[in-house]
Length: 274
Image (cartoon, rainbow, N blue to C red; front, side):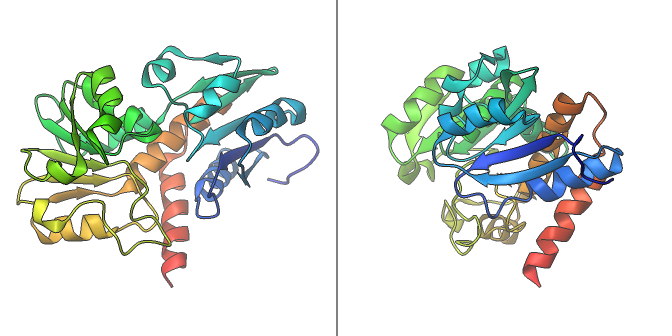
């Protein structure tokens, strides 16, 4: 489809944002659906000014990523109940100038998890306590999992653990915990710093399930080491695509072409590795 004066622009707001594959994914989805809209990436430090720009420019909607998922909420006209409960937004829909915040991260995370494992009744160790961690914790609690929240300090983990009925601990002491599922929600291991892991390989044991929400690179050091130790692994692509599909549907009111979106991101990631 040709981009023209009738096209609506969508965007991702974050810092950093050059690594994002959201433009590839959403532009492929628009093309597959026959929608002549466009999606671009903006590196943003001033989130209040950027949200004002959505209104001023008539941008149809936005993805919100690190580090603005929490701070963006204060500048929106409305935040839906799920996002308010989570305490973070990753999606903004412009409804005739009224900006409404949503959170599709939790949907993406749970859909990715349930493809590979059961959550109900299992102990889930979440690494990190930021906006993405809040979405994951919300989804796990909603599905009946038992939460362990590990941050750099116990104090950093306590608010999230309190809000979703989990236990708080420091990452340094989390290695001694019994867990069934481990989920990294931190940016540790994201390109270009892909040779680091948020936890040591000694934590892994056969039969565990390890998920990383980082999708670039697709096989993070965390996942490589977990697989070598006999764990089932879930890469960040599934969550990324599923949360993006929910965004697409919120913006357009149409079913998302999920497989088209997945393949577009895969091709982009493979090109990066060449």
